[in-house]
Image (cartoon, rainbow, N blue to C red; front, side, top):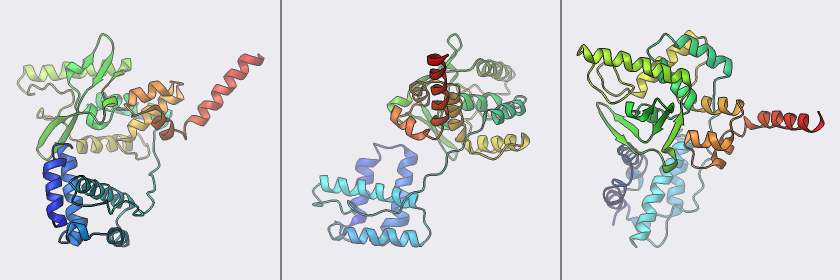
Length: 308
């Protein structure tokens, strides 16, 4: 069987039912752009480790990033593993292939002073409830854009994260959270809860006047449709510029929430639960650069207790 035929069968019979539509689309694009044209017409059993190594070397020479090559290899390796399970191959030729080193992007987070200045500028904006929630809870954009009013418990002051939203063009759909631990209940700051209540009053007044279509979602566009991340990013950048704050990504509000919590002395276990991380060890690794200063402060407090 040719590689193209094997890949098509794998995508159709295995991948499509297992991954999100956007991920499925990414898999197909990677295979089409980097694998099928070069190796697709080869018999699957004739593809060797050196063929794949040479392919990745050419990709790197063309200027493709190490992250793209790593992702491509992950997809191809998964397809070959399935071929081994189907007994089409004796072994996976991706095993042992050397990949270029991926340079992890430095994480950016706003300082306490920058957060204060940003919130002061954003307070009079219609985007304040959304961005304040993002900054203080550490939710992923796909999580807070999927929040429904029924997810907010005003009595307890919490928000339930139990779904994500996937938007492609004019189509959108709810999806599962990234992992099981991502389903969580997040405590809301009082000022964020107040901003959400005010937003609900505004939305209800618009619905009463037939200006605003009925929507179960909290954050919607002027037509009542789900907000796209692109629109939120655009407004976020504008507010950063107005506040005179360096440019950071919208996703960096998640890192900001984590570093603020660490600076406030919140336990890593609580922070890990709030962010929906896979494990506490992941949180420790991810924010290890922030922890030393907190440890210094903790050591000083213990010393004060012992020798005061």
